[in-house]
Length: 420
Image (cartoon, rainbow, N blue to C red; front, side, top):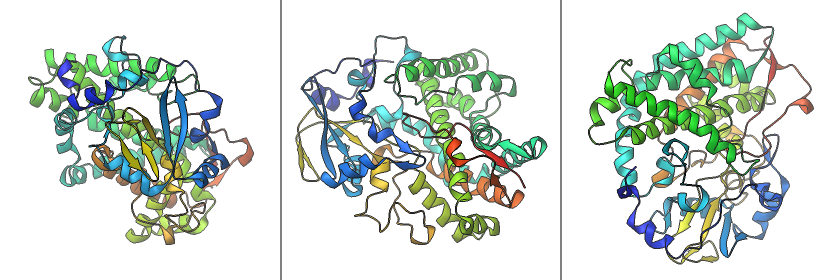
């Protein structure tokens, strides 16, 4: 990737920031924003918010790190790309690695480069293009439900449904040949595991990214892929973007469209099994009721726990705190979604009182490009699941469920269910 892809405004802010060395392990004292009790944030996150919606979180060799847990402050930071830069790669990652091993993507680029890259993907996520995907989503969901029925009466919903649906949809969108999908799947795990401070992220992400970079390079040399995002990117933008850039964009689509949706389907089903009225609402399938349940699931589960880090370009006031140029700001999406100042009884799952404006997909310039596709998947998959298996029930002691310990995207490792 050329040096032109580094925003000049960010370089100005970065020049005043103290460099933070590559950290091999996340200190125990600052892990709590990524820790959960089932689907609920641990109590310490709420206790931190009681001190203020923006608090001094840590200091790493003189660089101040702030944690935002209030809803209003979170929206303000996420929307303010003039005051905060997203390109923090020189601070939190090692860029001395091979291109496929480096962190990056749309979430860590600033304007004008962000717009240049995002423009390649935007046509694939218009309302009209997404409507054309509905038949594909229906087919993938039906296949997953058939697979569950074939392996019942007790199945692991994470493996048979939570994973299968978003993986199938995203592979169809990318134009991934069937012959490559099994190998591609092997590279999808451990992308968000922070137990070793992200070492697993960099190492595992390299496999997925290199796979896609190689696929782009192969398509450039000899077009052979089905008509999908990868083939069209190479055909329409190959002259303007190199293999690393296009492969990175494809990796971002995969990353944003697979792991988060897989977690939402699995954790969302676990929540619904504890709320029969919402499960029945999905089974009936009335559009307004389904929309309310899905939006409340997004708020309540919010699998993406932390937004991409921001670095202050200049001195700026956030909430009642003055953030200095070069400071790092972390936005806790789970904290913001459970803010009692934004919603009455935020710790309760209640679709009838869902507040507008979920931050599950982020906010502002870097809001998830695939947000509406994710909503389509959730609506389609959960309604179909409730109708096919109306008596679905947990097939183990809830205390035996194992959730991720420390990950950017929260999930459950397995969810045994009885089909009924």
